[in-house]
Length: 386
Ligand SMILES: *[C@@H]1O[C@H](CO)[C@@H](O)[C@H](O)[C@H]1NC(C)=O
Ligand SMILES: *[C@@H]1O[C@H](CO)[C@@H](O)[C@H](O)[C@H]1NC(C)=O
Ligand SMILES: *[C@@H]1O[C@H](CO)[C@@H](O)[C@H](O)[C@H]1NC(C)=O
Ligand SMILES: *[C@@H]1O[C@H](CO)[C@@H](O)[C@H](O)[C@H]1NC(C)=O
Ligand SMILES: *[C@@H]1O[C@H](CO)[C@@H](O)[C@H](O)[C@H]1NC(C)=O
Ligand SMILES: *[C@@H]1O[C@H](CO)[C@@H](O)[C@H](O)[C@H]1NC(C)=O
Image (cartoon, rainbow, N blue to C red; front, top):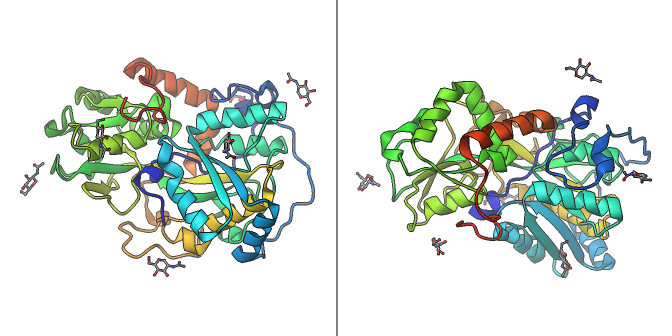
């Protein structure tokens, strides 16, 4: 049930109790191209009353009926960098709830969020639901009263670190970059970060530009802090291929037409797809975060959006996702890693905090741009091979 290799490459969100802070929100979010109101000053408090403090009590079947009565349609803007990244969720949802169409649009979260701001600013067409990587947007949107405060079934079981207490936003699944290598192209052991510096991997690495994806930038920030610029110099000496999108590296590693044998900026899930190995570093940091979802306050199809969110958080969907945002469900059979809370080399909450400091993110982005050059190529949604 967990989305496929491509869907897993979706880079989306997490969420921590990221309190809006006047210093960090005073800087315009670089990814938002519009809505001067929303970024020019710190958000006002949102005293809207009336949030229901109880989790949804309706069953999926009752929600299904409500969604059908509403028109049987839900629009989702999901962060990701391959066009087919939403196909698995759409197929599973529509098979489970006949008559309800899931219109999912995949694009980079940093582009989706600007469109949400534009739609909010000029009363344009809003999606019903967003599931994005740009975690810093959620507290701001809530402050602007743009999000529906709603607690789906299972909300109480979501780790407190991943959710707004009123249900304005919450993590729905955990994403995490892995060590991914091709069984046909290399036998190199990949267990620690220095393993990528092995001579046999020279000209065989493919990586996402950190200056094009904040979750990859966060990884490189962790690596710089752990190993210093000297490690980066040695990585660059390996002559990696830099690409846009986090789905592209795993696609190229898996594809016999390319020489690239390994990457560490893709998420292919926990069950290795055919021809690939997947691992987490046994030593040194890795990135994990909870993809965060929200329903828009002015969602055109609120009942169908509630159905979608209840479904994604249901045991039957969560079952396949691997590390889960809920604390009351078991890991799937055959899961290769320890529970997330027992992994001492990742902090799935830290990414949300890190994303809030847009000034620091921007400085890091330009630091890497200076080392690597600007990201080249069209959007991976247009051509993943460019
Ligand atoms: C903003 O940050 C500066 C420097 O860290 C600090 O001195 C100041 O108190 C902060 N202001 C607010 C309003 O948080
Ligand atoms: C900011 O929002 C207010 C209230 O919605 C509106 O009247 C004003 O024109 C907006 N200002 C800008 C610069 O968009
Ligand atoms: C699907 O969603 C997109 C983006 O929100 C929208 O432009 C498009 O019109 C929708 N398609 C249908 C068939 O509703
Ligand atoms: C990996 O090891 C196996 C067994 O020794 C060997 O047959 C295979 O050719 C090796 N693959 C590569 C890419 O070196
Ligand atoms: C492998 O890469 C080539 C060249 O970009 C592409 O045309 C082909 O469709 C890819 N194969 C698969 C299975 O994705
Ligand atoms: C989870 O998946 C396993 C095997 O894939 C299945 O046996 C089990 O019934 C599923 N549990 C739920 C709650 O769907």
